[in-house]
Image (cartoon, rainbow, N blue to C red; front, side, top):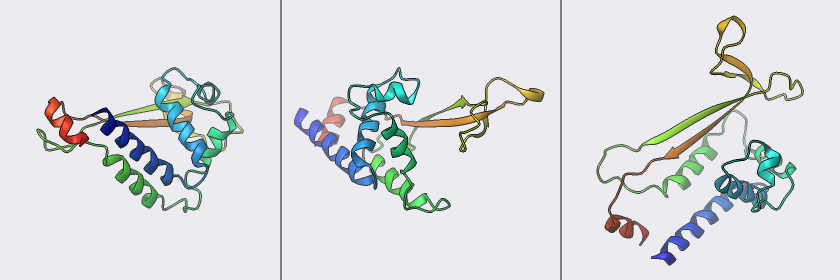
Length: 160
């Protein structure tokens, strides 16, 4: 059973690796660093993770080039391709007629960082001017698939 799990993980990693058009190795190190680090509060701290062998600049370059070659207005084909790769990892539904995902959106205030051209108005839990729940900065989102609780028999069937 362990070999099946390892082989499935290898296949998934290879699909993700091939998905990245530019800076594949740096992008995979970023994925590994994100997956194995729960305490990093900055790009620099993320780059200090033992699985990340490059400097912190490679992280921002990988992110900047994620949509390279795609028009700014039409990113849907690449998003759809990534969604298909990720959905292959989801177990088929047995009990409930819907998939369940958890979504977290976190704002990162950058009010005084005037050189960051991509910052914008984002939701903030604390009000600022005129009691508006907004702030200048970046917003980050994470979606997590929440599978059904399955018996060991169903898990073994999925792994084979």
